[in-house]
Image (cartoon, rainbow, N blue to C red; front, side, top):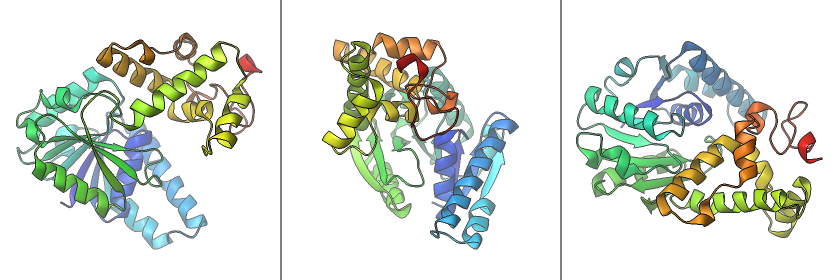
Length: 295
């Protein structure tokens, strides 16, 4: 398995493409617009430059990594002769279903189709694909080149053979694959998102301020990043989307998103990517200044 297609050049997609390419795989990076491709490639280059500055890779490694990536704006062209497709598009069920319907039409029947979804049912995605046994979840963590975990999610029909291939592939990438079953939120987000939501509820109810909540979790629970800062880093729209998937899937009120989170997303305050969330990122990406709304 040497030829990989990655669909989506956003935060996760470019990180996945970077990781495969750095390990010597030939990667076809696919997105619908040249602008998105350009942004994704620029991110890969700046991340590689950062690794050179830290001494973890050489200029030759950077050159080889970039040469391993070919970009496309058409799915049909980008998936020719690949062994695996990793979908890393926006966390939207209809978008993902449409992508997998197209992949089912244009890919060979032996191509493994993986989704980087962080919460959406693999079984539901596989239902629109011919040979659903080849569909699997491959949920990387952000930032992909650094984080070691990959959640491997078996759909209802996913075979042992496909699962083993993807587990072995994850190890070849230098990751630690962890197999989980296909239920809303899987393991990572089923535990993480209620914690983030509860921290937003704590702020919403006036129990404590933004930096106080994050300080308690960092110093009291040894978390490297407080939950509100982490929510900003993930993207508040992504957090809301995952909570909605779990709320719809379980019908349990403990997964209902906090009204403050809903309002912030409607107001376009999405965290780091929009320049403001619980913290103000206009001057620094380091969450040093609490957003005006909460200060």
